[in-house]
Length: 238
Image (tube, rainbow, N blue to C red; front, side, top):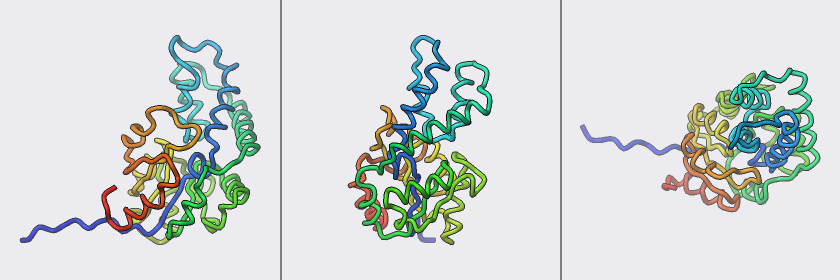
């Protein structure tokens, strides 16, 4: 019996995370969290910094992010209303300093695939950010978030919902992500991930972390994205 050659993936759709990929908000969120948590965590163990605790967790929703940090430090969890107040303050800071990732709109416009957004934010914030940055037409209001889907990353639900709405198998979808949380979700959904490390929040070692989580390729400049996608569409090895 002759050997069979595995067929290459046939990519037909593109799904993008929002914060840190479309909107350069994660650096703003990091700074806001540093300012909000510093007075609450004044006595960290020697050699531990607040920034080092927060940076690897960017991409998570605020509640698990905070729970993870306080658990790691062996501290009692903050009350839910205090976490909510912190979240509101971070959202306000991000909204006040809203800006698109440099070059992302041009890069996406050059990619001839239907597009959607899959984010851990809430749908109203994502839609508002897309409108304010002029990127809404690129996605035709195709937004998938935990408040709509019922699951947050690293659960694959938002990505599976996007593929289902497109009516295609998950394996036909390319994904843009900047966090381990997001890459984990997209890989669990059976999608091919392009990891982006060009945002203002990226910590040293993020390329290795995204690759370890399953990113197919990692890049740092949105100007490179159309060529990367074109190579994948042509079946070339990136």
